[in-house]
Image (tube, rainbow, N blue to C red; front, side, top):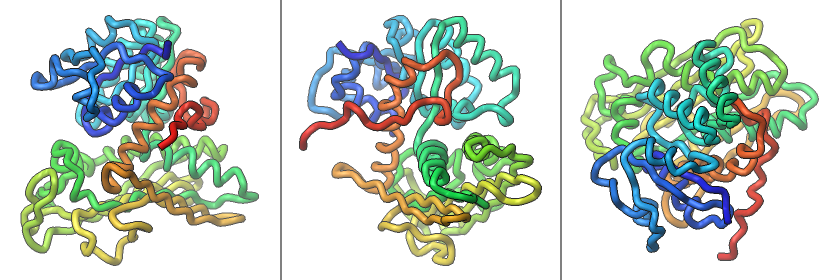
Length: 358
């Protein structure tokens, strides 16, 4: 008998997490929550894109998933545009004695210094009430912006700066809400997406910046934001829809953590919908997209991370990476002390239990 788990949110990340929860013998899927009526009543196997029937059918929202009394809830519902609601959902699960791992709300990845104290207190109170734990992670913010750079920094005699990069072509990414509403692809350059509203970048990636600072043993004094947008030279069709000529088709942004006015932690993203746009910006280490960790110090490092998959392109494999990290953390989260836990608290998630022959 595996760990009883429920999942809420079957979008790009949740669908891939669901597939592992079904197939991994460490877990016993007891419930699935969805947000759209067309998914209600469908078997979890179908929602995960698997050719099998689990007997677990989807229900609307969070309540039925919590009523199934799982040991752990995998929360992959949208958090970018509904952070308050996502935090409320997590608090409800924690208060009910259910541990939570997930991709949202992103602020809980490392909330100290970025999330209001009253919000942190309410989450911690719910965790104490339920003797439960929450761990929010992913790929970026997540694996590329905490575990990888800190593992490399652990070999250095001196570190002056840590920089992480995502360099990716998003043409095949089919999440319309993220592409158009959050990131602002297809919008006029003077009407950027939610991502570029003042303070949003710092809120979204400040968790990673502050966690890296904490891992280095320094306090981040300030976080700055910078972005550039590039228009489409002609109409471009992408998986999520049409990007019209003259609207945003490429973007580069940086979130920088300062210590004594020095840029100690930098998170940079270069996102295009066509590879020839802004060739002067950073280029990926493999066709389509990759991640990079750069450390300036003694020794210095430049390490490229190139995920791939037999079942999809660079965007699919990146989301798969995030889903795998979330699911594989479940046993350690269940065993952890109650409260908000981060990559600095949990033991190394090694992938124990994931080996299966081809």
